[in-house]
Length: 515
Image (spheres, rainbow, N blue to C red):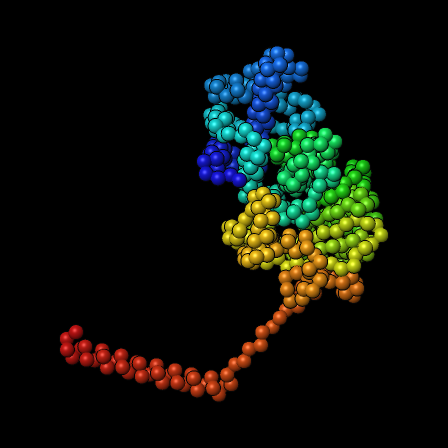
């Protein structure tokens, strides 16, 4: 978690860009990403040099050959601002080195089309010196620093780019409980928040298991996959994974819904996503298999079809959808809901308040959780009516309830909640009840969570909105008769007249006595 001096240092970097003429948050983060990458390459070379000196052996595959030493962070950071900018911009300089380094490496392969946009020597030098002063020695600190930078994207909501709130991602990951054996996919990866958090969960919960060579090899090379077609977001997401210690994530530069994504079929065991809402695509460009499942141009429905296609049988999914997916009566909406209920195993609907995505969107959303079976299996669906997520539901999104950073802290909050209910944050209650669903069968429809049987959902034409099934408990109140109310008004009026008369008498006495 970023606090105190470290937060101030990062804010200084951000403010330097702002005052230097670069105010687009995505552009700022992208330029910082390039600098962090070259800094990291220098750190890796330094580590290899220390190892070589210890073993008295030369480095087998140096990142920087001797004729490129002047491109190392530790060298150019001490040059004059003008020399540094020239070194970045010249042919064969720092930026060309970043773009050409290791064509198949986890980050540089996404550098195609990247542009160096820092305009002045003064700004470049200022940012390099500020980043040099920030201690980012371990994976946790590097990840926290980048997460804090990514939080700045929230101010870029008008550009259509914004992050899923991290505490919501953590809630979903905690509910799905990924394992080191999973192949986890986000087909709309963005800044890779879901993939990063799934990786963090596995590292935290399976630290001993990851010491086994075969488990570690799978986790590092095949467990994390995603798709994204925005070049800027690919680079940002790849760096996010890299700084969280996920070196070889399989991030594909592809439009996930397009015909170019033919290979994504029965590949993953867990899908986590917050796909774009309210998008519309030309049917001629959409993967044909998706249209067979749901005849629509709406991206939120097509992504559900894509996840079903991409999951292995038995694979699980948790996806954020706009409320309209749950109840809209169009043929396409009915198609996808019937598919989830009748042919797959729909397990849960968590209805979230409309303020969750503020300040950049006020749409009401829900989390769908289902398992791909291709043979049905839905017997009852668990509904939860989230009313609070630990933040205010206005544009400020101020933290007002107990918060958590690590998953162990969430586990502690769940245990605390069982002893003394937590207010202003339903997340511990949601995760705790989900993990212990056997106790939910007796819950009434007037409570925040309850089960709804399959037959009732069928009867309601697969309507999955919680308001369809939730019962409202009305408290009976009695009121005085009109005659009694009139008598009380008359009594108050008499008291008012008496008070007014008394005040007039007091004012008259004051005039006579000269006060």
